[in-house]
Length: 319
Image (tube, rainbow, N blue to C red):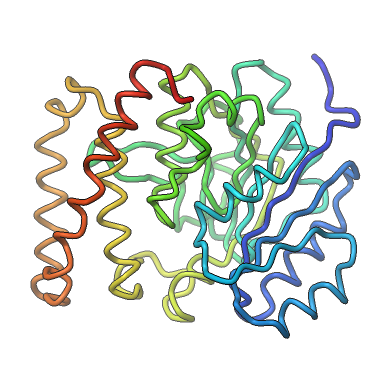
């Protein structure tokens, strides 16, 4: 089995400048046993003071401070375009890594040349609760993070194939990203955030790429640390704590994922599950946030572009 040796790993961290998440994340990157690293930070804080602090404390990184918030998907696209590594590790800033994470996770790519995505065991910040041991597609056409919210008792220690990888700690082979990109987008920039990891994994599966889980590679994630306005951290029902704008993204992006990637047969096979899930979502909105209903028609403007992308994906002509 070929080893990673001195392959450059490009680490792309997206930060909103909240609390001290970025400092903890970068400190854990500094401690990695694997040393052939390129570190790129996309700063969406819109805070000049935050920018200066990062430059002063982490002179080895490449910092890109944005004039407008690019959100997660487009921030990662920018970072990937700037990077030079053959392997790309995409991180939320509310993630920290065990010191051997990169060295161990890299081994997954060399098990099979068709493996384009690798997940480690992602725990919550308490170190005992599982955040994700791999991403899966549900019959409801939503994301399922295996083990989500369960205590880690070693039940997910066997390695193996998954559908995709959690976007907070997403390790990719560059060759796969180049193979599946649509135009200049690796992640669909229409998504902003939420479902961007599922969408990419679904597309990658259609192009013949695989995802693999390496449990010995451990990371820690403050679930909701950057998206829930300081509320609902590590709690399971995300939409309760989201702004209306982000809640709309959560709804919109699930539909875009299906339009782009679902087969006709798969759609009709799973239609009862899709409709059941939708009825629960809209029931929740009606009873707890009815003002969001007035904003839902904006989703329609994404349908045309999603159908165009679908035709490119189906034909295998992402470029």
